Length: 232
Image 1: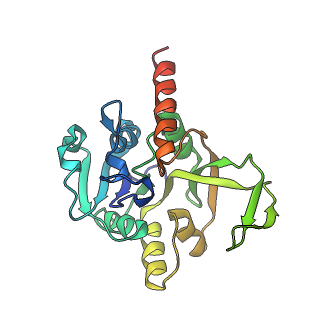
Image 2: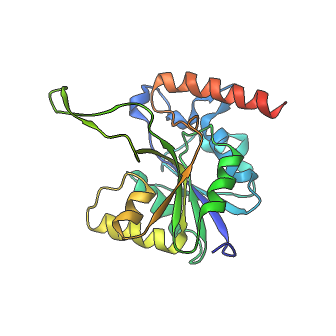
């Protein structure tokens, strides 16, 4: 498995309605740089990654204006209505053989250390995802806004990205799941549905996804802290 080429895919066709912004959340700025640029940097910095395919909305006018858009490793395709559609569109543009990292466009705090840990954990038999163990008490709610039950948090994890799989296997799993109307929330859910075993790799809890306005402030704080640590 380690000898197969490595690619990266980033679904970026979403509009981020929960953010309440006039532009897609991946183009909001932190320190004069778009969120998607931060999200791309660890993938582009990985020497094993041969190319990064970004699935954009057909009417995307923002990405091409970014400095990072001219990076030689980057290529763009038209995404779909849902995340799984965009990932599948990107996968279809790649070769038949290889491994693929799939990372969220609005997850800007990924570190190169977590990318390295993920790559080291994958085997020929199993895919792998970054994950953070749940620390809080978890509640399952009812439609009326009250608590249904307390969920045991032992062995419960937040699924993060990147997620790493055999390219051909993921492409087939996504295609079959979408054809059969299966709800796919991330790449691991498609692979689980197809019968594959997926490893959990401990990832940093600051690898957050910017979904709401308050997440932007938190991501800014985390990126500032990471920069200070990198500068010694």
